[in-house]
Image (cartoon, rainbow, N blue to C red):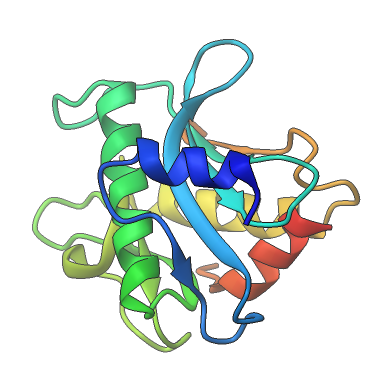
Length: 172
């Protein structure tokens, strides 16, 4: 394990090293709230052995539910890591909270699993926004050079994002 990843895992409050069952057993992944070059809070992914550095997944620019962008980033990073550590984070899917109409982005085991508050990674303003975030992530994964600064800006048809493919796209 490289020293950079060890330092990252010590700095996080939640356990940060988890092995994804479908990836090589030696590959470890950590999520944390960092900052972009413009000092905007960003949910980041660190992949052991990735020489290209940590990558932004979501950049947080707006308050929601009385939470600042930094607070939303911190919560999302904790939820990403907890889902990863549980081993049931195979897909990212959009959904809706039927109690308040907010859109959700969730971690699920199977493409057919329902996105709901119990498996939520973060909330957005509405269901349309959740689908937009999911679609942009999928498009970003398909772009050449993904991970070279390509991110989803949270201020912007439901699709399941395969986390193995996402991790691999950031590792190339």
